[in-house]
Length: 196
Image (cartoon, rainbow, N blue to C red; front, side, top):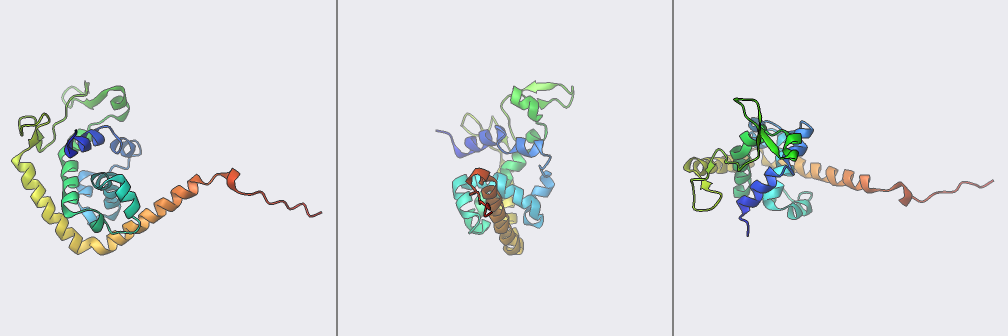
């Protein structure tokens, strides 16, 4: 059975989030994401593409139109999502989406040649840390998590109400637009106006 971290890393690494954002050039910078609720649009991307995966897609989809983000996700969930993003950002930033799909994922910055995919260690995770196959968190990662936890807690107090209400509206608009796209022209009854 996979651990939560393995599932998230494998899920993020399999491009269900990153490739779509890279292909459409909608991936914000790490600095923009780490602004949290102060940068509303980046916060929406963070919630839609990252935090929803931590909480669970079904729970998120059912709750995001009715419930505030801070009620759907704990401070720990949110801080952990930010930590994961920060941990693997350098790897994601070097992804060549088309080559990744063919089995090549990174460009060697020294030779400018593409490298075959291999295990990815993040900024705060290494193989030598922890007793598990995939390693564990370095001390710096644990310290960074505690910092992010405090930042998220403060950000929720200072910027939470308005931004989270706007996010609920964003979710409602997303649901409405998806439902509108599903309407099939053949489902609309034909009205006959042959009264002559």
